[in-house]
Image (cartoon, rainbow, N blue to C red; front, top):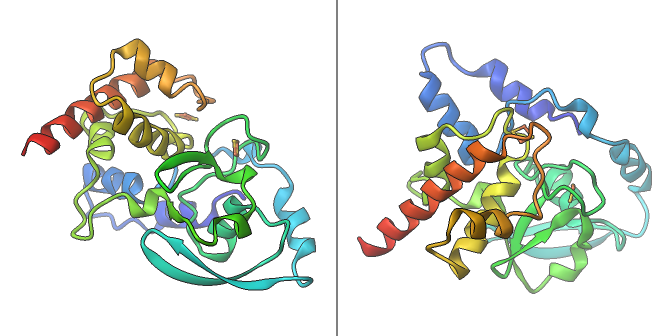
Length: 214
Ligand code: FES
Ligand code: FES
């Protein structure tokens, strides 16, 4: 819901941290510099009321870590990630498979996590925006592309675009701008910042090609 954790990150940012370092942190974690409260629906209340009955303990592979978590059979992956595992980089916009802000990779394939039941990913590998950077903190080339081009306005949609972009660029590492736009057409930006987003993603593609040659 209205990402209190995200706002806390913003308010707690040390004064000495440069704007560039701060933005880098935001991009790595998927925290949105956003006042996008209206995008969030009342689903937390609904889900909250459901807690307490019929949960079962599962082990999920999230960002290459085994995570034990109690889930209900009707619980969505987006809900589990955000509210039980604290992975709030995955955003909830529409909560009905329309906006793409909740996109994560499941066995390398992009999915709307708001429309995936958590128990169905028990034996799969889930990758969220938090797991994209290397263990030494080096950003994924697509994340770096966003920094290079200063893409995104409020950045609420950014984690979903980045995850979708990473998956698409694995299938088409050298797309035209039009091909990339089509590849990302399952993701919406409420700020309509599409031109800048595409430029950032094209830079990400370039970064990925360069990294694969290194
Ligand atoms: S929250 Fe919009 S597609 Fe999942
Ligand atoms: S929703 Fe604001 S930049 Fe996309």
